[in-house]
Image (cartoon, rainbow, N blue to C red; front, top):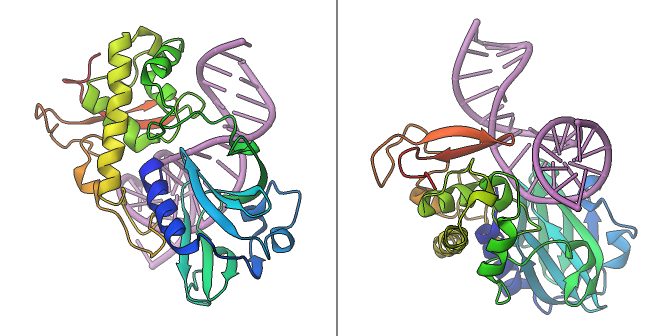
Length: 273
DNA sequence: ACTTCTCCCTGTGGGC
DNA sequence: TGCCCACAGGGAGAAG
């Protein structure tokens, strides 16, 4: 569920509360939350200072005082909650860390998310190096990304979800961007004109910016900021989840289809490109 | 080399 | 009331 805007909300909250804080005791309560590590987080983190909190796409990481990173991926249901020690009592609490008088709790119902200690290479964690820049980054070049998209023999939606082409976009914002740009999700990416592909990337950025202003998209209590509060962008969705609702542009009902196994919502009348 | 499928996991909700 | 199944989702790695 969390895509770029939701992860950015979490990043800002973590930065506000934790930059300059030092890890004390760390407790891993579910091994899947710490998978992929060749060191024990309980051993390596205590004593390290959080110097920065950064993000690319849906990947989040702490820059640590030893020059390494702690990569955090929320996947579908991960939450990073900052509070007083012992405050979080969820049965889905997977990792908890003391940092001075605060506690950082990683809660994750489906255990797809993880924390991973990794070296930094040119300011990017080694395990994130295959992820393309996201549309909020200064180095993001829509014309260049559009050209890469147009070499793909896959559906447009599949390409928008490919984090090695453009990162941060998930099913919700892909559907919203395609609705805004009038692009059919099942169209082959290679069939798009350059200007339409660029427009689609610009709409992706715009819709994610608007969502960020609303605190992100939430359907239930699974996506929350570091204080446990939900965002409001679900009220503004034009396509995602709107099956049988009238299209805000033309009034025709929004339909649902599957693209490579993922649900996609769109308007058959105004998405034809 | 490129594209698509499978799997990891839990909770929810619809159908019977 | 309860059982069963489909579904939701990101991305690694396997299979096509």
